[in-house]
Image 1 (spheres, rainbow, N blue to C red):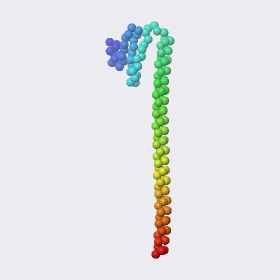
Image 2 (cartoon, helix red, strand yellow; image 1 turned 90 degrees about the vertical axis):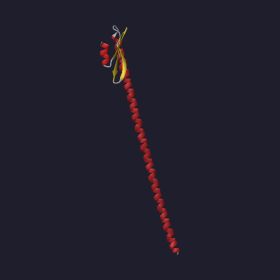
Image 3 (cartoon, helix red, strand yellow; image 1 turned 135 degrees about the horizontal axis):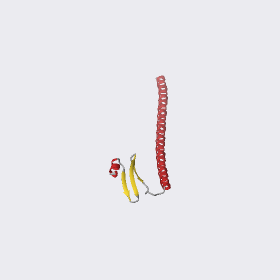
Length: 121
């Protein structure tokens, strides 16, 4: 009966010879939280609890480091893309300026040739 009540709450319980085992869903993560048999020293329980806390902390820190690395990579890629866009824009402006100066020089030479041609006639 207790097993059914726990199952309704989403907790799975299993009775074994050495004790009771519960599987409790924690934010979508299913972990087996095993209770020690009666008579086991409380120091062992505390050591196991400390180990669980340490492993949870290391998992959180690892996930945080991965998240930070992903953010840094995205920032770096954005900066590289912006630098490429700036370089392309600068090259386009230089090409445009070069074309203008060539056009000006060509127009001056053409005007000079027209003057010479007019003088010859």
